[in-house]
Image (cartoon, rainbow, N blue to C red; front, side):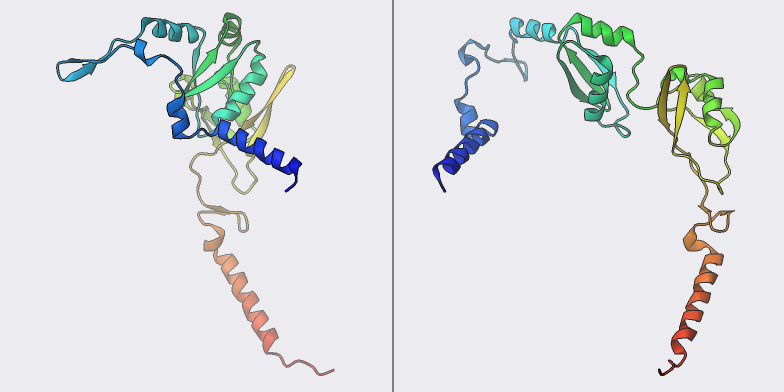
Length: 241
């Protein structure tokens, strides 16, 4: 190892140590003077501690521009949502997404203008069809790309839940059902995912509803016939050249 390689290795070790401090290193760090912190007392059977008022007020100040959001994290990851949200919001300051559990998260901002930009500029939809599209004629128009229209689910029209919009459609399972469609408006378009509800078994080979390819008698018969033909061909004596 030459001098240059030794220097590079030394820098790597320094960086690794900075990013990964040991337990002993953490014990050496004293971010605040512990002597100024209040001491716990006992109140009945439970310990009691008066917290520093200045620290509490500092926390209130830190979160005074924050907003609480919620996502269906089964459909979209928080990191993806943050990236898309920042692209749409075009904020001037810092923004941090802090997960709170069960799909909720804090949007931590550092200025009033960005908060009002998010709060007053929406609705913002990171994933799924926005509720402004949940009008009966709009949803029926969208569902027409899938099959013959029947009706919009009443819970969707009443906005009883905001997870998804549901439309009953008569579908021809012998044809390909799209997984995504393009929704167009004047000067705007978006790609929307289509999710089917519980569907029956369908095999496109015989166009029959009720079974899969592994259960199709026509396919099984064809496979058996091919095996017989192949066996007869293998048993035929090979001609000598």
